[in-house]
Length: 452
Image (tube, one colour):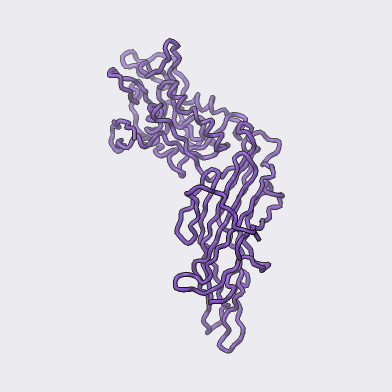
């Protein structure tokens, strides 16, 4: 037993435990604060003509877990307190240890990559008794003491495939959760004739509480091997003030297209596809997906309207560029959304692609980021193509290379810090607060971005 209460492993205010009070469970890429209500009960065996007696208790349980993005430790911390009981006073009513060999509350890391690889539970080092007496004092249990414990699991370095080079080969999942096996020393009340009764279930089934999914990897470009909590879906945020045209393009497709909502919620995320050699398909997204959307058209266009018959990409002459004089170092880019480095890219064909466009970029909504005669900048319908139907599943825009590339310039560091691996989910916030005045229900979308 611990000599003193262990400190929480998550120090931030948002995770301060409030045992006995309602609190929301929260998770980040490396930290989790999870709150449970644990209910235990025992009922007497069924005897015809005799009333069944049931005793029970409720406990608030706070559980924390912390992973190291550049290390191998998985630290956990747990605190529990009885908040209600129907057991009679004076009994060791509910035990989670405290000398009973059949009672336990252990931490379980279910993976051959965890600890010694035996996939067995690990005892938590607690401060405070792991047994609670029965009886209530009004609305408060007579025994409302708190038990606090901690235990650390260690990634032993094993991965899915020791000799492989893909993200799948170099990573491994390690579910971590609590296993709770309660017992009681309370005897059931006897039968009317004094005969001893028995609980219907002498040993209730273990209560396996929902935990976290730890994933550790050895992806070389991310530095030292490390571990994250893969259930957390991170959000990549554009620098909207610096790159408004890229933000407007992504926002348009997210809010008024055939794939409305893509990349906005956990239920409809983007999925990262790393470069060729790292993804499990040996696929080159920067070439194959991008070429399908952004291949250039070099044939003749209509002389009167400039209409592009094959709908391949053509840089727009009115695209707003940002040259550094006298270098003239900006050029027109093809900006696409969803991004080429996602499984949602319209340029990635089935069965692997999640959102294929049969004709590639020809099926996308076509826009241009232009500067008009009055000097203001706009994201406009590119009238050289058919007008948008707003049912397209992708967007393609003629845009400044500095804007297009600048909007994604932080993504490499984003992926490194969060250890994104093949098929990981993430969200995109193009700067939603800038578009609060935009009404996407209207047939024609005309609105002004406003800094919040």
